[in-house]
Image (cartoon, rainbow, N blue to C red; front, side):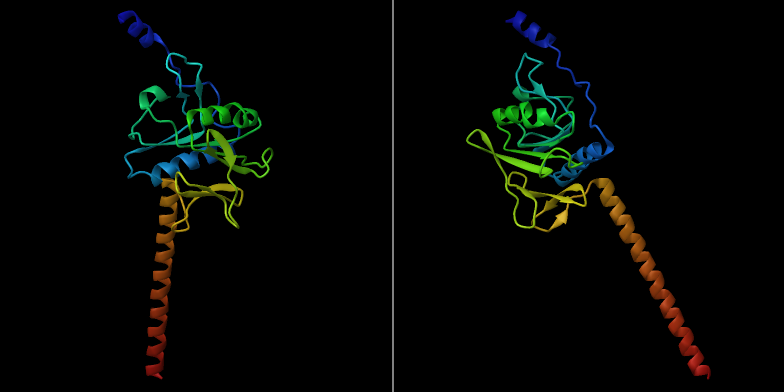
Length: 228
């Protein structure tokens, strides 16, 4: 028993596969947006974990049995920093996986990874081709049904719906966006939210300054009228 435990402890599970996060800035931006927007959206749910560009190991004792989803969401596990995601320790596969597909990853995204995610029980799998070079349409989604992935069809004049996350995926002006269907609002990253707040504050200050100018001008005109 001691020998088995020692051997298990000596198995090395790398924290990186040596591959870049994305092939272009457009791909990297899409990954960062999804990860940060989802983390912020689920910030108050202590049993939702969101990760990006992290190695997911699904077979204990076999470091080769791993995938590196661009972004994934796990429901039913505690938040917290992880260096890798080991399925046998967590006991829960990702609920949803997002892949930002590219020239170098499209075959794996549509083949090997898709099969692995189905095998692991990932309920929904979304692929997005930000440059629109490989996928037609560039945003595609699959829902797991009886162990097989079935295409998610877009709703009229809308994007794809993730029943698991209760969110919609839309492509707006060439950018992937997540939308809260209950409010119609787009999910923002913390940086985007801060920028929006600054813009609103600046617009409010400008409006208040213009109101004060108009009041002063009105007071001036009234004074001239009385004087005449």
